[in-house]
Length: 199
Image: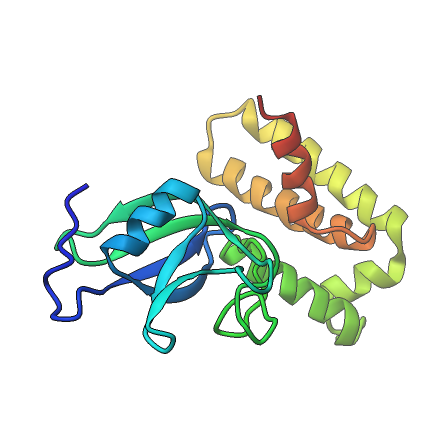
């Protein structure tokens, strides 16, 4: 890997630390060539501390090491993207990330939709909110709706109308997310099961 440590007069380059699984950015540190080499050798991320003026392995005092998974160099050869498996919180304040964010998987729109469903369940008027009304009716009604939508998906899968098939698929997914929350779960719990099955 061709890394240009000479680009800056102090010999340091930024190293963006990303969780290899959740893809969340955990922190930003700086490396010189010696820190980079030690990271490779130990498989634990080591920085050059501009405050301590020495090499600093993340976790050397706290035990919250960043175990190396991969390193990528950017197009200018002067910034690293380092994917890690964190052992404990990353920030010295005790939070998962240096931006005080929880380091959990995020599935974009699906995660946002789950938050909306939870908000409707907890706060909405069941006479005005369809989601709230389903939760009020209980698990049997929600499970029934999932079954009905699943049947609709099967029916549309056998026809040639892609728009209807996708529409019914969206309905099924939406109601399944509601059912998961009614059972006390979220989509991440299902994904964890799928990951365990992966070989």
